Each structure stands twice: as structure tokens, then as C-alpha cells.
Length: 128
Image (cartoon, rainbow, N blue to C red; front, side, top):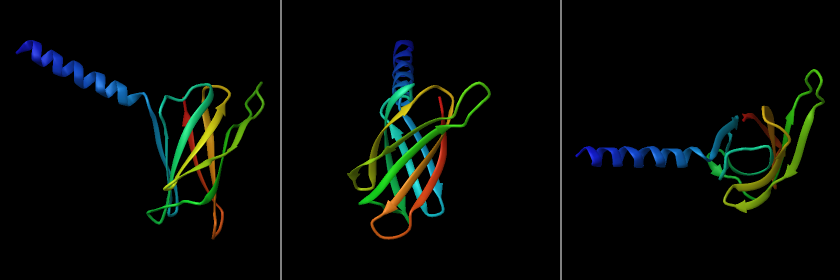
């Protein structure tokens, strides 16, 4: 009985650690919601992020999506910035390869330009 309990506890902990490895974050502005995910934890350098975008609870496809990540200037360090256009994967999903120069808090601005309608911006931040 004790062995079974230890085995179940080990399985539960290992599955939660496997799920903890991925990155996930939600951001919204008015009726636009963005769910940001990555298969791997965020690191310094190149990161592949997937943005699931919904407007009025419907997947937003056929839009131009660009991402700007920046860290404001601090004493002894200039402002750092990375800009990239996202690739449309369909069904409201967009993929972007974002270069993050160093650990810390980065501001993320997601610019969404639909085929019809006004351009919008969703802001959030990431910290690693």
C-alpha cells in the first residue's frame, strides 16, 4: 500500500513538473483577448511564441499581427527592443520568433490589423 501511494505521488508530481515547463499568459484589451503560449520556458535569445487571438469571442484570422518586446532604459543600460511580424497559422493562431536579449521584465505590445476594421494593440509584460 505504501509503495502504491509513493508511486502515485511521484506520477502526480512529475506530470505537474512537465506541464510547468511551458509558458502561458493571457492578455486582453476591450473585446480582444490574446492567449500567449510557448512549448518551452522563456529564455534569453530566440523564443517561439504562439498567440491565439479572439475578438468578440471569435477566432481572429487573416490579420496582420506584429509583436514588439522592449525593456525600457535603466541607469547604465540602453533601451532594448525586438520587433517581429507573426505568421498566420489559421484559426486565430499566430506564431512569432521573438529575440529576448536578457532576463528581466519585458513589455510586450501586440499590434493586430484585421483585413477589415481598425488596428488595435494589446499590452502585457513577461518576466523571466
